[in-house]
Image (tube, rainbow over all chains, first blue to last red; front, side, top):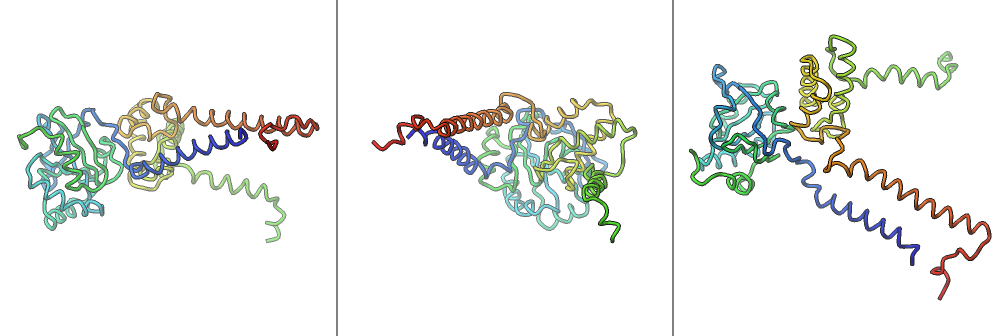
Length: 177
Length: 151
């Protein structure tokens, strides 16, 4: 019997490791944000359609807000757009768009055609702000609390289900301040 | 083509290697002002992971995010940041996963320790097998384990 003990143990350990890997594989591509619990990175970005006006992170502080990173080149962004519009109609929290490495005209057209769920859209033409947020693909959606700390990041298309579970649940009762 | 044949294959391969190696460097054309800074840039961009295509470094990846991160590294080098500061700024934004060589911490220790444990385990097993077999070769039948003898 003992000659099977070590190979058997190795088999079981390997099977265990592979089982954990397989079970967790759907989450492998969605990395937890390194910013969780930390202050939102400082930014000062022009507003889409009004490049004279700049919005800073300080201006958004004082109440919770949501940052949605998108681009017209991003297929999954089109996919989530309808859900975002439905969510925006609930008026629970300002949704700030971050138009990532896109073109102003294309972005404006997109919002005209598909509707605009955003309280404001900030333009990150060269992708610097996205890097500071640790963005590695669009769409990504961040929940920022009233103290300016990142509380959650969702990678991939937003859905009503994800919103209820991870975003609405983090809101203080009462909605828009 | 005759002259090609007379060249030993090893020299040909060596020449191919020399020709190919500059291409494995960063994709960007614009170099840093000094060779020393360029060397740091090449080093750093090769040890940072491209977050979109995770088995490539940002030096080797053609995607937009990798080129944005290379620009970030270049700007930080020019701004006078140390390699450690640049690595820290990347980890602060993307987490330890962006480093091909993560730091030795409580959460990452197993990444460093496990290979050595497995190596030890393998050496132990190999040692046992070799010892058993050599004992058999020596003609000493008594080392056959009791389990192998029909009851």
